Length: 112
Image (cartoon, rainbow, N blue to C red):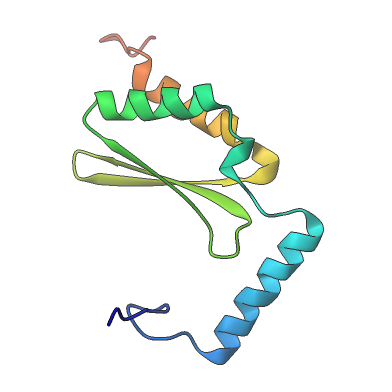
């Protein structure tokens, strides 16, 4: 039998915490605040993935628990960088930034 874990490292969330999460999700639905990777341009998704993985890293995609914020996690050389992107900031802009961070060559004097 597969055990379904809640939050808090296997502990089920408190009723108050679970109710608060449901309320946030409902508010986001009615305000149009739920994010979706459908908003992203396929080209920027691919470019960011290729740029990070070509350097030996990994790029993880997710959303906040309430569904209102994109989360991008970059894993590289034992380091973890988390990027949180509000819907109003635009996921394409964040993906483009990741692409340029990994593909722009920097000279020895720090100039690009």
